[in-house]
Amino acid sequence: MGDSAYSFSLTTFSRTGKLLQIEYALNAVANGRTSLGICAKDGVVIATDKKLSSTLVDTDQVSKVQGITEGSGFVYSGLGPDYRVLGESLLVGFGLGVELVRKARKSSQSYYLQYRENKPVSQLVKSTASVMQEYTQSGGVRPFGVSLLVAGVDADNTPRLYQVDPSGAYFGWKATAIGKNYVNAKNFLEKRYQDDMELEDAIHTALLTLREGFEGEMTNENIEVGVVSNVDGKFRVLTPEQIQDYLDEAN
Image (tube, rainbow, N blue to C red; front, side, top):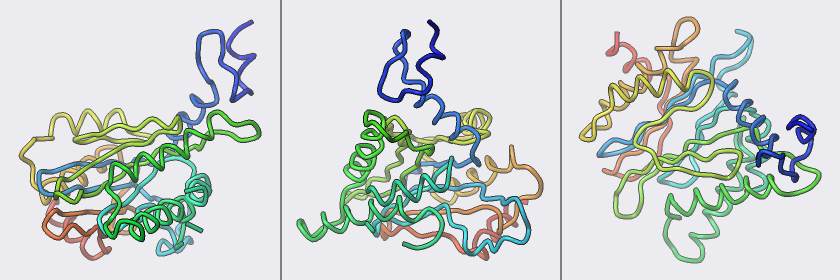
């Protein structure tokens, strides 16, 4: 009996020790739009392709980059609805992908009420990864078809970049990419990344990396960028006008 006999079971290992539904979830992530993150010495940038299937869609209502705490934010690749549902499992938002974000925001607010300080990025990542891991060992559910990049600055002003996968595994990165073109994007980042890179350089590198595998013309309407600097420790999503300025500089 081959692995295919186990492909519909989430809670049963195949003979080769795999949970195939998790592999299928990673395939869903790999089919999603490209997202990437770069951790510079003075901040973190996350960026994503949010190109839509129709020009009639109001791009202002579509947001893949979301702030979680004052000093951290998420971006995802994969299934948008799963991102929303995951958030509800994490606050009970604010646009596409907000429910996943809601849970993270709720846990962050609970932490602030108890300790009177923002939740550290590492703990935010662990709590989010725990929710995703629960969905890999429970009957009647399936893994989330999303991977996340989490950008933030800790209380000691150290920039952090993490990736969280559908299995509940999480990793710290200097720079990484997820989604459809992640292999080429990672190769590009490996050539461009430097340990002493500053945030402004990281933003330009992020846009150049997105452009490498972008389908069609890249504009300020079909990409999204979030940044957090250790100068003020605040996460913010760049406006279309700010993104256009960076695109003009890149050109």
